[in-house]
Length: 298
Image (cartoon, rainbow, N blue to C red; front, side, top):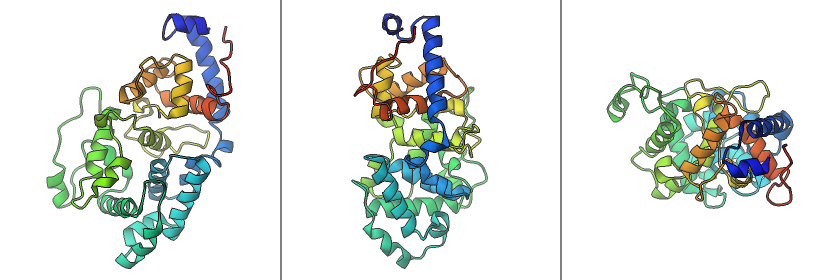
């Protein structure tokens, strides 16, 4: 099959069927609760309240660079600093309560970033019930007081609805809409307008939006659809996808993530990012491109 794929980025029909069967089997292998424990998604799985899941899911995704064991450890530390109840702490904290957060740091994410995240979450949850609203280019009306002026009706969605690029670009603008945002924090929240792959945000959206019965992704959001998600493109997924010729672009940027997702939609147009389980598992568990070899599909 590799020869077939080399002849055409998507191969012929028989080659595509073989690749889809292979990837479907890998999705079934890795989209299982047994793999939660060693993945950053274990952090939001510590909670049952929707807002806690959203807050710590977003934070775990934001801090997801480096070794997974360290990411999980730092997220648990952050939860402890918020007294084990992130949403309650964010909504009800007083100024002295923030002092203990000054010690928090993960790589380049420091106390300044932490305090701004707290400020944004409080601001948002005082106006909305869910973090999903932060990704909607047209916030629901009516907003409270000054918010109606800050986010006026932006018109109706395009004929095909809002796409991933709209959601992500709006979110970054909204996230940094508070007047006291620190410029340094902007490096931690990406957007397609910067040509970023938006790996962490796309991973977070997968967690919140995808719906199945496997118990890994949460599926607690309903306005953003699984079909609109973009596959998170990290180092492992990028490497495996290139070996399978699912990516042909030389650069790794937003357009590359779109290219990969369009390829995956040929296998499942309603839920293309389920293949993130397969591609990531092949890269990090089976070490494709490092120690593994391509199987023979034919």
